[in-house]
Amino acid sequence: MSRTPEQVADVAAAAAPYLESWLEHQRRRQRVPGVQAAIRVGDRLVLDTALGQADATTGEPLTGRHLFRIASHSKTFTATAVLQLVEAGRMRLDDPIGRWVPELADRAPAAAAVTVRELLGHQAGVVRDGADTDYWQLLHPFPDAAALLDIVAAPGGLTFGRNEHFKYSNIGYSLLGLAIEAASGRPYNTFVQQEVVERLGLADTGPELDPAREAEYAAGHTGLFDGETTRLRVDHVDTRAMAAATGFYSTARDLTSYGAAHFTGDPTLLTDESKRLMRRPESEVSAHGRPARRYGLGLDLDTVGDRKLVGHSGGYPGHITRTWIDPEAQVVVSVLTNSIDGPADSLARGLLALLDLALDAPERDEDTPDPASLSRWTGRWADLWGPADVALLGGRLVMLHPNAPAPAEEWLELTVEDDRTLRYESVAGFASAGETVEYEWGPDGTATSIRAGGMTMWPTEAFLAGRARQVAPGSAG
Image (cartoon, rainbow, N blue to C red; front, side):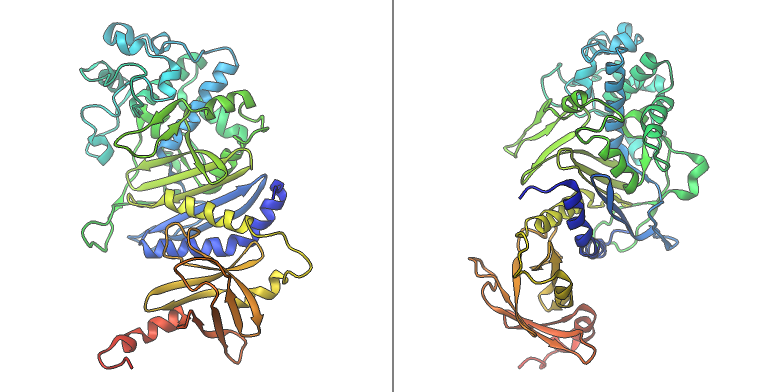
């Protein structure tokens, strides 16, 4: 069933409370300090949440205004800026980079010959980060412009020949930053701030660490190794000449506004012709028999179900981030995490999958129960085998498993039989399809337990309070 963005926004807004609940469950289960997430459909922000802590060492709560380093999201801003210059007739995609960075001509003539298009699509063969990349673990500063050129001119500055392989390169995108400066006559940071950030009115987005806003940044945190339970704080640093590849900061809310500017039909930043060019597969990434991935010009490309998605991830010391955009259906999902092992991509994909599950619900008719009457059945239940959710998505009740990183892969629809009984749909499967879920109601009208597939489950807090007695020797039978 085809829906307008306004109709999709209504479904998404109704599902948002469960999406937030699932997100918080995943955050706590994976012990992520903080998660900031937003979903925009058309021009409507349907989810905007901040969960957990901005700084685990102080306990500061995370808010929707805390700033995250979004790292390689920066490449989408850089590619957008390049296409703006192309539209203005000030640059061509097939220009050799040496035209805009003439210092390369004598020092690295082979690198000078690679084109703007090849750099945008990671087809130039340029080294990823250089021979000494310890700046990524904060052992020394990120390269300045002179050091950047030294990296390109050094032996190994070109790892592959042009268009030989997809070769992801932060150094290549940093060269594009220098090209933007030369073609525009403005510093890179100034150009993208004026021509991208300010055009969209993004108050919480910028191309590089802003010392004046130091108190607004969510702290970064180390990963958890070998059973560790404590994370260390990771401070933010300036990425210097690599801002075009990895310097940007933003919020999930702002990133959905930026993503919406990449919807088909939105002329704010680029023409649809340029956006189609960015979204066209420029590179195929395939090795060791794994399914192929694709990359456009500054954008990851993926197909999930019926959705053709574009976007980018970001990995900065202490922050892992992901934004996915469906430019035709006008949906953007952005998830920002503040630990170096943060599961931003799986959380973003999970939110999209849950949204699609809600959208896949059959169209309502006169026999369909009013969703308001179904809300009393919803909740999170737990037994010895883990939690299960009865959720209201798209106006129907479904049983889900919130521990799953892909929560929509295994689910069953539930229908009401009487005032204390639901029944699973009759389909093939390994779960309890066709059986009943029996509810016990307390005096206040809330459910005190359920029996699902014959097994008793309780509200999570009640189950945890009694679990020790349940598994104690001699307690069974």
